[in-house]
Length: 112
Image (cartoon, rainbow, N blue to C red):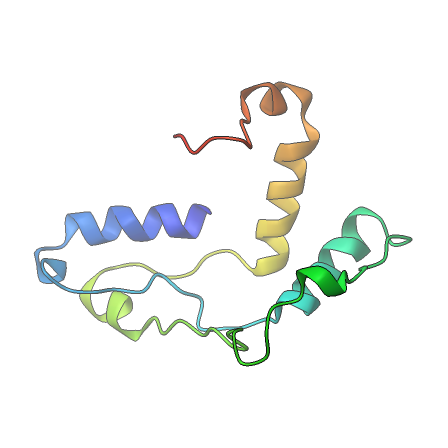
């Protein structure tokens, strides 16, 4: 999250980015399954992923890989990724673990 915000700030500060489509990306990838397993290992190692056949998407309807390139943002701005996935997950989990933060969290609506 912090890297994303820094990316938006750097894009806004650079005249070279005007009219450009730019990824803010780590140039690393992780599958949704591996990310879920990583979260489980951090939050509750006894938890398990359960699949519901009714909710499975049809074959060929899923994107198997997403890998954002960051060469352009690095070339046009001073942005660099500063946080690892593990650091970001730790920070996010800490935020959600604070009852004061949860009072402000509204999962049913989109807001800033």
